[in-house]
Length: 629
Image 1 (cartoon, rainbow, N blue to C red):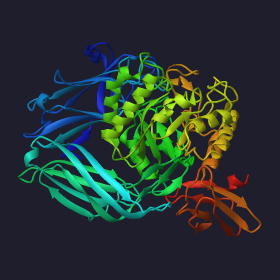
Image 2 (tube, rainbow, N blue to C red):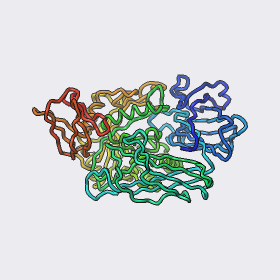
Image 3 (spheres, rainbow, N blue to C red):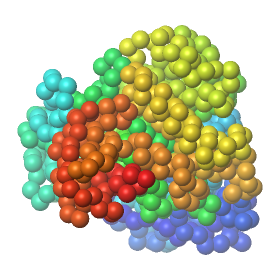
Image 4 (spheres, rainbow, N blue to C red):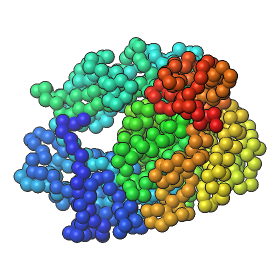
C-alpha cells in the first residue's frame, strides 16, 4: 500500500446534465449505482458525485492519487474545478488519476466526478449489444492514495513452477521467481527493498514472519529471476499463496511508496487436446455467474455480497468460470484463496459495431492493457478473453481475434488467450473459435441454435480441428424464450454433460448459468427487475433443484453404498482430476487416500445420515444422505 490511503465512501450525488443538479443532491455511500433506485431505474444519463478533501490532505514533497476500481462508464474527474482525468470507453477496468498539482494546502478541496452510462458506439460494451445490467455510477470503491516523490507504477511478477516431466500432479518443488518494477519520479536515486514470504492474509497460511528471500535494488528496475527450492504450488484444491512486499525508499531512508502483492506458483499448459494443471492431465467442470443481479444492489455489490455468490458458485463443485466483463480485485482475491479458475474477458459482446470489431480496436486494446496490468498477479486467472459472439465466421472478426490474442500475449505470455464463438456449428472449418488457445464454443443446440443435432454437429466441429482442446463455454436454458422451466433446465444440463463426457477433446465445461440475472435486454420484469431467467439459482442466489444436479454431477467423486459400507470412486470422465487431501466426515474424520481418476476407496462401517465428503479446505463436496436418495 502507499504511505497513507483511505477509501472515500461518503459523497453527495445527483442526476442531471450539469453539476448544478448537486444543489438538490443527496448523500450516498460507495459503492453506488442510481439504476437500482426508484427514481433512477430506467435512466441512462449523467450522474454527478462530489466530496470534500481537507486542506491537510497533502504535505510537502508528497503526491496524491485517486484509484477508481470501477466507474460506469465515461468518467471525468475534477479537483477544485481543474479536470485531472478522463476515462472513456471502459466502465469495468480500474484507473488512477494523479491529483497532486490540483490540491490546495490552505483550504478544503472539492472533488467532483461525472459519470455517464448512455449507450455508446465508441465504447465496450458497444451500444446495447451486451446481456447484463447497464448500471451507472461509482459502483466500486474509490481510494485516495498518498505517496512520496517516487511511486511504484507497475509491478510484474514472474512465478513459474519447474515441473518434472511426468504426467502426474505435482504440489511442491523448484520454481523460478522474479519481478519487474516500473518507478515514476526520483527513480534514479530510489532504492527498492523487497522480501518474499510464504502465505497471505486469510489464506491457507497467514504470511510468515521471516522472508524466504529478500534484497535491495539500487536501480529499482526489478529482480532477475532466481531458482527457489521447496515451493508449494497453487492448486484449485489447495491454493497455496505467497506475498511479495516492496518498499521504495529515498536516499535519506524515507519510504516513498509500498506494495504487498499476493500471487501463486502454478502451471496450466496445453498439450494437443488436453489440459495439464501442475503436470496432471485434467478435465475441469465449471459454471458462469452473472454479478450485479441483486435488485437491491445492482453492480454496487460490497465484498460480502460478492463472496456470498462466489461461495455458492464454488459449492456447486465448479472449478472453472468466466466473466463477460472485468471484475473487481475483491472477486479475484477470493478466487485466489478458494481455488476457482477464471477466464476474465473484455466486454466485447454481440453484433455491434456493424462495421466489424476492428473499428473498436483502440478501445479493445486499452481495456486489454488495463485489465492485464491490474490483475496479472492473480493465480486464479488462467486465461484472458478477447470477445464473445462477434460473428466469428466472418474474416474481419477473425482478423480482430488474431490481433487481440497477439496483443494480450505481448502483455502476458504466461496465460491462455481465447475467443468465445456462437457460430462454430454453422461452418466448423472457417470459424474464429479456433483462433485462440482453446476452442471455446457456446452450445445452445436445441434452443437458440436451431437446425442442428447435438452429436453430428459436434462431431463435425471436432473432426475439423483434430488435436485441439474444446470447451463448451455456455449451455443451458433461458426462460421465457424457451419453455420447460427448471426441470427442462436440469434435463438440458444432464443431456449435454453426458455427451461431453464421451468426447476426449472436450477439456472442460462452463454451464450457463449460476443465477437469474438483471439485464437491459431481459424478457421478464421492468426497471431494476428486468431479468433473464437463465439460472440454477434466483436473483438473490437461492438454489433451484437444477443447482443440486450440477453439484452432484460436478463432484470429482461418486458414492456407491454396499453391504459393508461406502465405496468412493474418483471420476474418470468429466470432471477428471486427482483427489488429494479429501476427508470423509462420518461422526469423525477419515482421510481419503489419494485417488487418481478411475481409482476407488472402500470405507467399511455404518454411514451416518449426516456423513459428507470435504475438500482439503473444508468445503463440502457431497452430502451422502442426498447422494443415497
